[in-house]
Image (tube, rainbow, N blue to C red; front, top):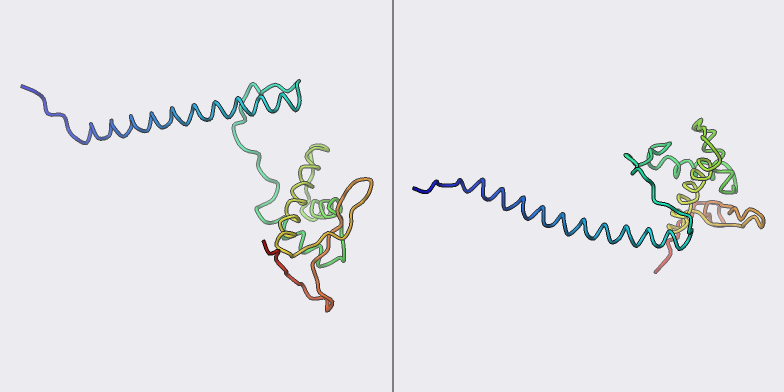
Length: 156
């Protein structure tokens, strides 16, 4: 006499088997991509070695999402023109941020620059100049002749 196997158990087992197979395929793709990235990193920097430990968490940001971008606009409204490093310093001072080192400060300034570039693509801010030695960009709000904010998006 054969024992009847509940269909819910066999269905669940089949689902898990399919999921396992999909995960194996995905793992193989991730492994191939990691190897390619390792190779590319070694081409750029031959002394580069993959980290022994994988970071447990992504780095926390210093400020809530959108705070840097809003602070950029606020500061550009208050002052005529500012460079990226000036904006980064003012935002850091405004939010009482301290940096562990020069790299952390540069990373923050890079975030400020990225926010400004997004606004530039939207036509909200524009570059007015560049410092020849530091290559720092000078920014201002995109205003018309009447002094009102002029948002002109780029047409693709």
